[in-house]
Amino acid sequence: MAIDATQPYDDSNIFAKILRGEIPSTKVYDDEWAYAFEDINPQADIHTLVIPKGQYVSWDDFSARASDAEIGGFIRAVGTVARAKGLVEPGYRLLANIGQNGGQEVPHLHVHIFGGHHLGPMLVK
Image (cartoon, rainbow, N blue to C red):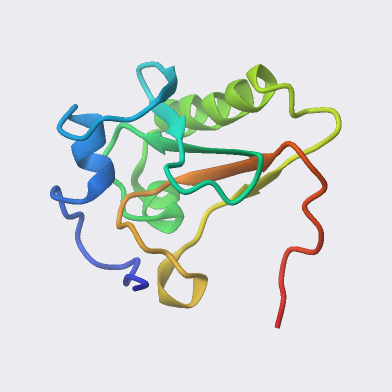
């Protein structure tokens, strides 16, 4: 079920629980700004999630409220994970769903990194 990206942050969401260590995950990357882990239901050969450590519901919320350091650290983390996975060449896809029409299901900003094979067209009607 898609969520409203304008709702207040819900500290009981699954990614908040992963950050607190209440739910296990397969860690890929961890620093001051971001945490990356393998998706438990991968949609590609490589499917990794990167989440900021701050309490942000969506990309919109993050871009409006996060500090420059948080934004820079998070974006660098996404790039670091993609490079570590060897995805720069031949290429990969980043996806951040925002709100109901975007299909966002967890009310914590997260970026999906997909790769490992040709991904085909992005949107299908």
